[in-house]
Length: 435
Image 1 (cartoon, helix red, strand yellow):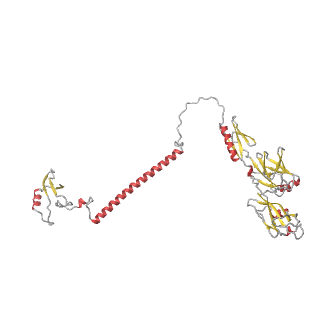
Image 2: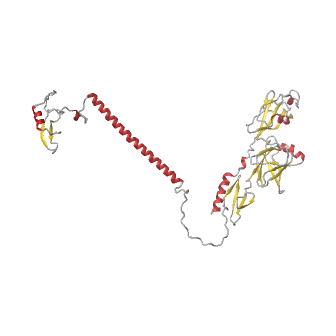
Image 3: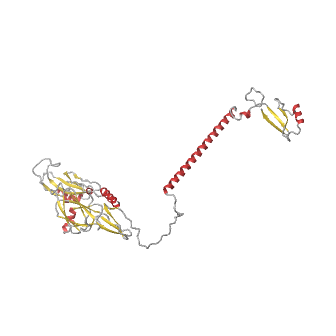
């Protein structure tokens, strides 16, 4: 079951991550421009590319932008390709005047005929310079080299160009004819030889062609011609994996077999793009043959003091719950205190208003502020009060009296008061009650 899942995973990743052949970036189109006398030839390329002049002629060539009539003198022209390459190759943009003295000096036509400059160029990626024809290193990024550079640096010396990479990786080669418009040849042949002396003949048409070689070193050889080919190469595959502890590794190109040292357990991974994809085993547990030993009865193990009883999830849940409960308590307490403050504010405001207006009829102070009177028709009048005189020793009433309505505020006493005081000499407690 594990191997089935691994194969399914490898298939999915292969579809998603395998390098596509169309992504070599050899998408060059040859552009031909006619530049008349007193004009300036101004080719331009994107910032990531550079100009390469495929062909440039100066003369009275054909009817077009600069020649409007046929005088029967067509075909006289001079080849100024090398001159234009020195001026523009390797640059993002350049400017060359047609009336340049060095160009006009090559005038091949009779005097009186109008001449113009016809130039063809392509925008190519940055090309590498060949200091040596051997051990040209290929890495995971595309590297570009022109066939004209190979001819001048290697083939004229009678040796091919050698492209190398790491011993565990493959080499992918792409090629395309870039002067397909100005060249009458539709295809060229290139011979590639690997480290096992296997020879492959590749036909390169005007459209890009790709070929992958399962070798860490290849030699490229072709016959010089007027056809210009743009070569691109890069390294494919995965680097060697370092064997983990207690394992051994055996590699067969893009397949890696890993096994355990102490048993027969093995598994395989495949190289997809630049990564090893597949099931990963574990050989860290070594099995050793030991004599049979009577195991003691199992004792329930108690958790160590440092061992946590709750998992992280439970701890997070408890923390969140306690925080929410604390927030609810704080909010409830604040709400209750706010309500109490509002009640106190309303009560104090009502009392202040009543004290300012003098209306105590609707408050608890009204009963205390009512005047003492026997007027039963007055709703605010208090009932008549009667005082009981008690004996201090036996707590029994020995007499009653009512205060008179209009007692003089002088120091004299009434006859009733005097008589009561004389007859109650030992009375000390007076209690008032309301009927």
